[in-house]
Image (tube, rainbow, N blue to C red; front, side, top):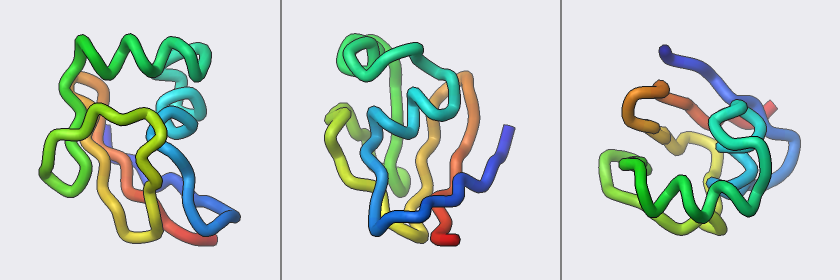
Length: 72
């Protein structure tokens, strides 16, 4: 699945993205999810739930989908 994720603010955190896209049900679960599942930010491995995602960033959640961060 490929999806554009539109943000109203300057950035969104990786944990917020995972919650918003229903990959996890809470921010606390994001921490554990990232320990056990591969996530790439702009083709580089990323495991920090607080990592800030900006307009133009691409997040690949393995076995879930590819998310394109876009500013409204």
